[in-house]
Image (cartoon, rainbow, N blue to C red; front, side):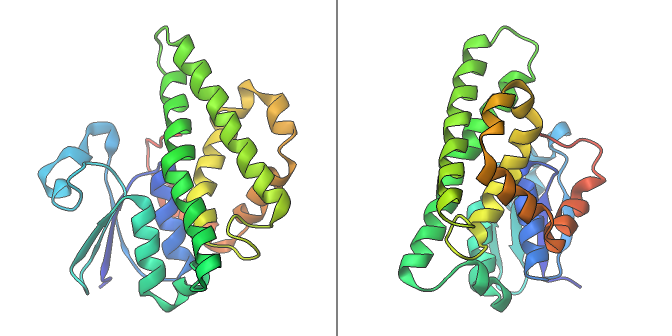
Length: 218
């Protein structure tokens, strides 16, 4: 029996966690929380995450509940030996990885998430769509500039920072790129990085774990 229970759904934030667990080859029980029907607001889930959002993790070995995707990836990287390669211990390298990790949670995810939300609503929200589109492009430019300097966000090596950002860039390619093709033509470094990560076996496996959900989001 797996010692880890992962509560998640097929969203960019949810995909981070399945990718991470496949990268460190750690067995886990996947518990799908259908946010389309509000399952994340049910008492049994709120016991794991009081905020009522996916993903969340429960570690039967330590008794820890972990919620918020960044916290989950850091927890897994620090606990398991295979995770050490994804979160460096050297102070400067660790700071770079964590900076990009939390940059994603504070910027890229929330902004692209708002763009996706407003762009899919059949109401007059042109101002909101334009605002979040422009900010999303600005943030993607920052990623592209960083990846011109370095093959991965944390530096020379693939890390949790890349896992955090990858599903949201995938979302942008699906939802934002069709309306702003000229901008994406210039994101050569970002697109190359996305292709490299897409080809990783653990990433493919992590995405496939959620691919059979009937109602994915972005």
